[in-house]
Length: 338
Image (cartoon, rainbow, N blue to C red):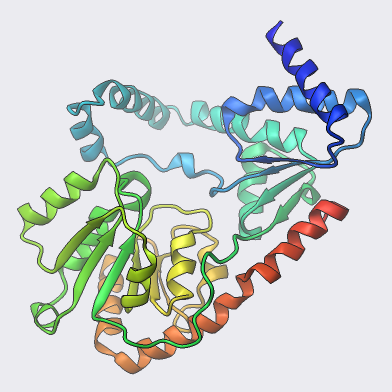
């Protein structure tokens, strides 16, 4: 009866409210049955309402597991039940790749099958999504990036000797511990000159990072907690990202539009759409910690080069201003295409 109730509710809403387009924000396994009901209603009443499903993350991010040392530590936290379950699932998934692939197929195939269009953040994600969904028709995919959060400033000025991290304090995705390891290798002479690492954000792993900095004797680090990040973008000279995966990171674009030069690993394909290496920021090959540290120091030492990158970032990020992204959505809503 529950499914029949949902079908009736969807039918009533679609017919009584004169719905022209249905846009589903986010693709999650728990939503798949609802998508099936929704597709059934649309087909049944023959109203030709386009159904678009938007994915806000990188396809296949589920393949990135939490660091074992952190997961084991969390088993002994107040949320031990949740992390014991995650520990067992992660162990099973890593031992049985076929089971993992089956789980991902179930998540991605239904939206692919149900949707008239699947909207991804980057065209670079189409192949991965299609592979996970085992799709055939790639014309179903449309890529529309996120738009800028803030107005683009006209010029860079009054920057401080600050390297900035703005992130959720979550080790699985953001790898702040890796950033702290990289920062620990920064020469003391740069710290003596006034350079600091400022970390903005909150989350379950914040106490762990604070204890890590203290236990390892890492100098020049300030944890600011949950704050409005805009003043920090405006002050900082360099933006540091060490994520294991991202979709289309807003923090990266927010930094660039405030003249804060980004340095990031190429752990997600969309980075190459946002950052042009050594033109408006720095891209480091995934896992090359030595190169990351070397380039970070170069950014801190070479004022002229850093300022040139910042100026280029200000200009380049205008591609993602609201007036450039909204027409993509309007074209999709009106014509079913980007």
